[in-house]
Image (cartoon, rainbow, N blue to C red; front, side, top):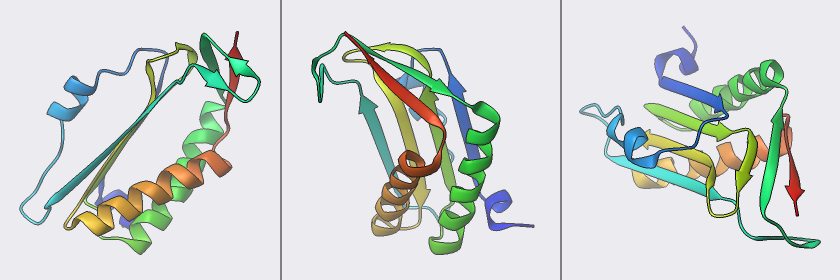
Amino acid sequence: MSAVTAMNLEIIITESAIDEAILEQGCPMSDGMGAVVRFLGVVRGREEDGPIRAIRYEAYEAMARHQFDVILEEVARRWPVGSVRLVHRVGVVPVGEPSLWVEVVSPHRAEAFAACQYLIDDMKRVVPIWKRPQS
């Protein structure tokens, strides 16, 4: 069994709005876990070229899932993570709405923060999810 299959894992790519309250209710905690780090990425009203009204996200979903598996193998190798849940929205996401929600559960906060940071940074680098600002 790989380290990734040993952790609770949920990756969702969806056109639906991200509902933090519902997601937070499903946090899988066990006796050995003591830290939960959550990150919410929200569409801001300005990109490099000026103001925007939304961002259109597109994904090559099969490859995105493969790349998430690769990233999560590395997360599992580096940190004692009990759970990773990630929701990435695709389609048109208006300014002020979340496009990304990540939750990492680990025994200690330093490990949870480090794993979350690594996951997001590597996701932006290698996962085929593209964004196009909408004016």
